[in-house]
Structures are given as structure tokens and as C-alpha cells.
Length: 112
Image 1 (tube, one colour):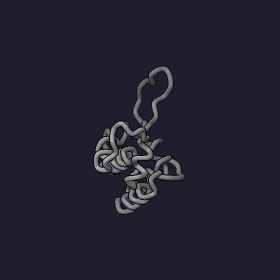
Image 2 (cartoon, one colour; image 1 turned 135 degrees about the vertical axis):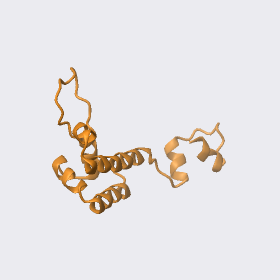
Image 3 (cartoon, rainbow, N blue to C red; image 1 turned 90 degrees about the horizontal axis):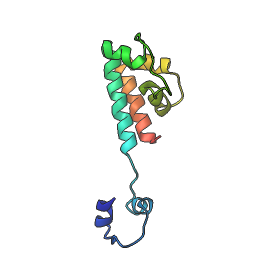
Image 4 (cartoon, one colour; image 1 turned 180 degrees about the horizontal axis):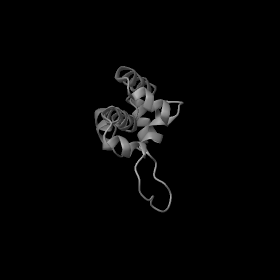
């Protein structure tokens, strides 16, 4: 936030939270949204290709699971970000590239 403080000429001695600085600059945090968008575009690329990466991301490969808490899967995270729907619905939409791009663009604009 130091660059916004510098652009708005807010001294570093002034006790303002980063949220207040963002509100003054009419900006909002977008790093998580950018990461989700890139994950979604990569997922679409991998799913249409249908090779080893497809098997890994859908979790359909054999082997033992590691102990402890399961890690969050890419598919589950994107399913919550893209809106209501199951993972199987998302896999069906991925096949149609134009529909997939529209779905990603709408989720990115909503900012969820």
C-alpha cells in the first residue's frame, strides 16, 4: 500500500489502515480474484487437452492418499468461486470454450 500512500500524499506517520487508504483511492484488492481467474483458464486448457494433467486435476489416478487432513483440490476451490454447481457441471462446461470463457468473465466481474 505504500505506493497508494505516496500517490495520495499520506505521510507514513499518519495512522491510517490499508482499508482506509484503499477506500480513498477507490481501489480494492484483486490478487485473489486474479489467481482464481488464472487457475480457471489453466483448468480449461488442461481439461480440453485430456492427458495426464486431466487425470491429476480430477483425482482419477491410483495410489495411496497421504495421512492427515486432505488438501483443498483445485476443482473444489473453483467450484465455489464460479458459483453454485457441482464439479461434474463444471467439467461439462469446460468442453465448450466460449461458454467457459463467459463463465470465468462473469465470476471475475462479480468479484466473489
